Every structure is written in structure tokens, then in C-alpha cells.
Image 1 (tube, one colour):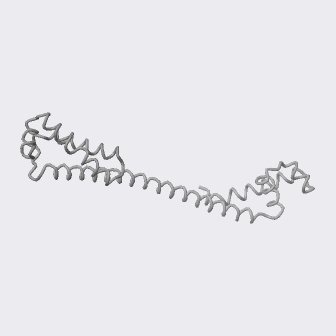
Image 2 (image 1 turned 90 degrees about the vertical axis):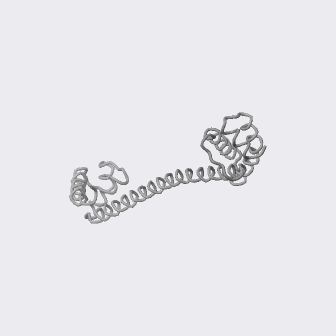
Image 3 (image 1 turned 30 degrees about the horizontal axis):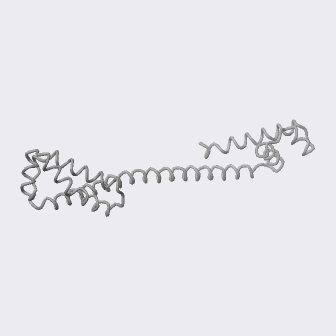
Length: 177
């Protein structure tokens, strides 16, 4: 069928003209799109969308060049549109990923900063007080065990822990908020 006759029949809604167009160009268009994307399913989806769009817009479509060129260009544009929409989705996901990584890194940096400041404060404690604090809070020893290890009373351990905690509370408020 000549292109102009086929286009006229399509505009009139002739299903035989549409079927002819479909069987004549479908495989060719699928191969063309497949060569662009290397995905059979995507190629078929794009060509089918193009063919359905042609049928739906048959009354308003103005085809001045060859029908084959029109279909080729329409499929090509559909493929580019698919790439653009996927790129936008990818860009959005990529931005979210990098925002999350940045946030995690900032939190880790803040944690490292706070730990460094806290360690500096612990190092400012008097030696005996520091030793008792480390054994209790970092080594998880009980007051009784610390007192036995150091040969001092439990009351002394309590007093030293109280001094350490008061010192840390007073001096750590500036960076722990």
C-alpha cells in the first residue's frame, strides 16, 4: 500500500490499514529500538506505545514525509523520552543517596568531635579520679571491685566518681548539646 493511501485509510479508522501498518513495520521498529537499548521488552513496549499512539491520534496526525520515517522518528523520540524519565528518577535517587551519606558522615564527624572533647576532659581529671572513672565507666567494673583493686574503700570510690561526674557534667555541656 502506498503511504498516502494508508494514511487516508488510517484517518478514517480502517482497522485493516492499521493491521497492515502494524505487521509491515512492527519488527523493523523493534529491531531499531533494540539496537539502541539492548532490551527486547523495552523495545517492544516503546514500539507498541508508538503504534497505539498512532491509532489514537490518527485523526489529527499530519504525516508529510514517508510513513516509515514518521514511525522511525516517533519511536526514536519515545526512546529518548524513556531515557530522560529514567535519568530523572536516577538523579533523584542519586541525590538522596549522597544526601544520606553526607548526613551520616556529618553525624560521624560530630560523634568523633564529641568523643575527642570528652576524652580531653577525662584526661584533665586528677590521676586517681581518672583511674576510677575509667574502671567504672569504660571497663564496667563495680565500685566494690574497684575498691578491692586499688586497696581503697568503696566510699572513696563513690566520692571520686561523684567528683568526676560533676566535673564532666559542668565542662561537657558546651559541646554535648
